[in-house]
Length: 161
Image (cartoon, rainbow, N blue to C red; front, side, top):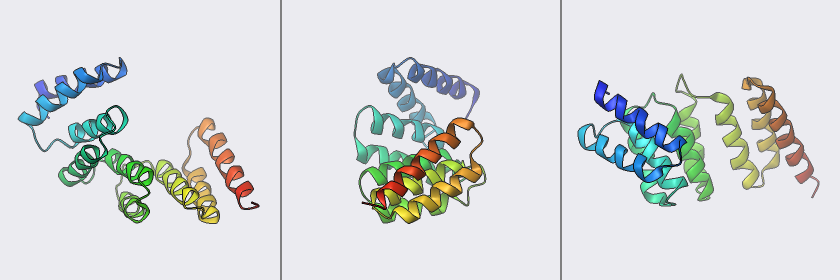
C-alpha cells in the first residue's frame, strides 16, 4: 500500500476498534477503488460483511479475493475457514485449512483450533481432540493452553454420549 492508503487503512482499523463499522467500511471501499488488489482491505471488508452485516456471500468473496491477490497473507484463510464452517461447508473449510498450513506466517495454533471446531461440529470427536492437541503444541499463551484443555475435555465428554 502507498503511504496515503496505509494511513487510511490504519484509520479504518481504528474505526473498527471504536465500533464505527460504517465509517470503516466506507474507508475500505474507498481504498479498493484505488487499490483493488489489496489483500488487507479485502480481508477487513470480509470481516465487516461477516460479523457486522451478516452478508456471508460478500464476506466470502472478499476473503477469497484476499487469498487470490496475496496468497502469503495468513488472515483470510482463518476467516474464510470460520465462515465455511459456520455454513456447514465442511469439505471447503477443510481444504482452506489444508492450504493455510503452507502459509509461512499463519498462526498454526489457530488453524488447528479451527480444524478442531470443524470436526467437533461434524461430531468426529476423536479428530477434533487430535487437532486440539496439535494446537496445544503451537500455543504460546497460558490462556490459549487452558482454553484448549477445556476444548479437549469437552470433546472427551462428548465421546461418552
